[in-house]
Length: 277
Image (cartoon, rainbow, N blue to C red; front, side, top):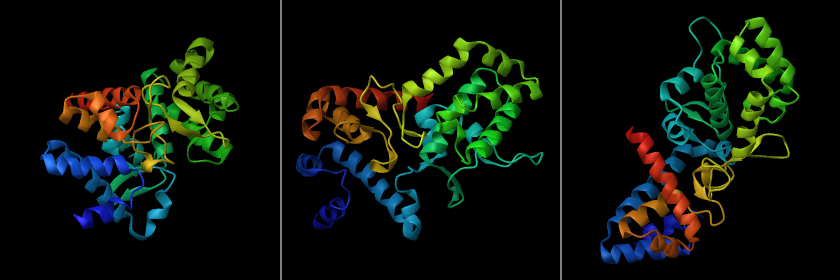
């Protein structure tokens, strides 16, 4: 027991309310203890794997391809193919901050936002070849690996989109650019879901829109989904609500508002359905 307490204290997101929850569940033999400890130990394992290079992940977030699929609903095969060099010698679409870690592709927060943007452009019918060329040109223009995570890509970089559209004769892209409403809608969707930092890059993402309490912020809790005000992981709140059979009880144990608890449960329910689909 003392060993568990010592480890827990090393993680600032497990506040006093969570310790009380753990001890209470040990005494009552509740299933929620097992669920939350499994989640907690997975975070410990992730931290230990970082070893001497762990500082490179701080403030950037770190996600597996499965994580990105779960949060964005973008197909895992597509994500993996965008992270690899193409067979025709073209460079990989997403350069990525980390590449392979233990033979598995890992993505940063900005990588994930790039994935989300590319997926939405593909949904609009824009060819992957045109997206690749726009991405490459914007990388050169702004000297960044994450052009689709920048606000300037939609404003200062508009000329590049038009130029590539004409060169590639990509009618979908050209029509998208000609239709001010359509292109504006992509930009609006982008800004409605992300907060832009002083460096012009996305700094946090609201996966259910800014009207809900759930946020993914690479500067907080290693970029895992949390409720914004209180900073508690959504999975912890949702698991407890499920085990207790009450959202209000979960909210009370973690000291979060009922609105935050409901958003957390709603978000995790969406992820569960997405995984099961």
